[in-house]
Length: 433
Image (cartoon, rainbow, N blue to C red):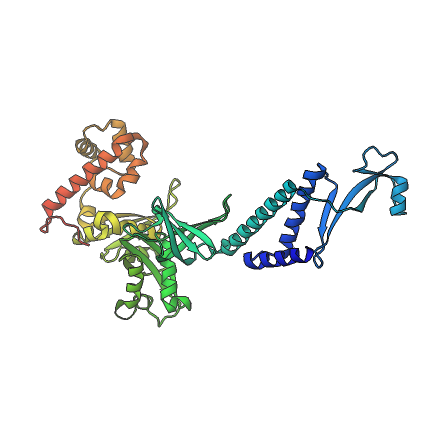
């Protein structure tokens, strides 16, 4: 039986990838629990399995006392001296006890403890395997779909690709091979929880590292990335060697390299921009393909964590700089980490309206605005329909005085700017791509 025990432990350790010592300790703990089912609570008992022969030994610790009141926990001084001549009162001696017979219930308890310890050890091993892989790309196979969340098999582990981390419009079926970015690895009661993403900007940066040899070699470096998954992205790159064009290296011959990455992201359009140490130059490049007349960088205020950039563009470049539904400006702001304010040359040259005129214009824009709401808008610099539209719904929602009118006000500003743009432009006001 002892030989069989050693063979079983060896086999489990090999199959599950668990250290044999962990299994021996689990078995000792399980047998100790089983013995307590038979003998009752015995905190002073220790079990030991010989690692070479498989023999089980039971040891009990007893305290040396003058008068014994509990034979299981105490030993007389005379008996202690017989075991160890140097024994003194209050010492603790350990002596070997006869092996215990385990009943059916005790054996079942031992089995449960062993299985639980094996499961725990397996979970720990899987967690350690993936613990340092945050921010890396993993390959896996789609196992099943649960409420639009994709469960992916990655080796012996399972990872989840939540619906919010999937590129809009993409669909998966069991058996599909998939690449994704490791967003988070954490412990949970059911084992390691691995969360994946295909929308994170880091996924785009990692794809560049995977597909472009110059980035792998460190000749070209990805400095920043911003994306609106499935639609458009901007990536800032820089070269560590003067004779290497970072944009050309990323695009590849006839666009072959960038096309591979774009296909992986369901046709996402990717703008590659050369990074610059100068913030003004970097912001101007980030607004590509629009041409910029001037850039003024403002320092962040006490209540603002990010710097502000005032961008002036030619009148015919304003829509291009802002982009369809403000996408180009939003991506540029994410890429540079700045708050971007875009104005046309004619808008900048026009005299600023008097405060009374601005208040009147705001009250006409949405008739249900109170004086307190108008004051809050003017204080925030949102004193015109154009400024309100550029700020976006999220910025308006931050102004507590507006309450539930923020969305209605943004819609009104959007309609006003669209109508006036159509009046002043021969192309009917359509935003270019």
